[in-house]
Image (cartoon, rainbow, N blue to C red):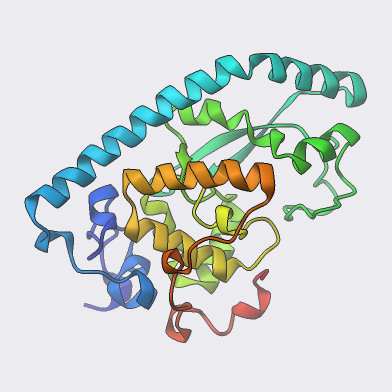
Length: 271
């Protein structure tokens, strides 16, 4: 049987088996970065597998509690932001955009509207830039402080996202990135998140896609509930102080290998 014939239901031979079955041949051992390959969880002691299951339950519990508390405490801020959007630019307060989540399930992600209506009518789907002319005055301020992302607490409460995980992308970009990086779909073997391992290291927005993928896959393979707590703590430091430099021991030690990138497509990938 060839790699392309591997069933989408075949488990990955790595830590993602505990989180979610593999999403096709892209998650096979040959397609994973050298830094992310670990032994099969079938060879782990029973307590290790049990701790991962408990960790997943704790993760969901933290998501529910964190999103509920966040929505209650931030309600006054939400009201002020909504009023500012309505007064300055009119139109809807919330912006719904289709994203790809765990298991490649699509969902509608909530954001405060930060751009003019029909912002992509002339361009089609494109990434936003730091000084995007399509942003409204209030929207630019919201994006500068990441406040436009706060309504995603609704997605977390609904179970479509987690507080921590690889950032969800739009379907059109997922297809492009998966062609250029065969291992890209592996990041959908865990819940997508509001913040992630790549983001707290500074790989977000218009930065290297390859670096973001390396950190996302590193997160997938090293995931524990404790790691989520570390990411949340560092997110606070990142938002407040802009910190992105941490212990080198916690970074992926190797880059994606040439065999893990589609050479003919990399020239078209945003880095």
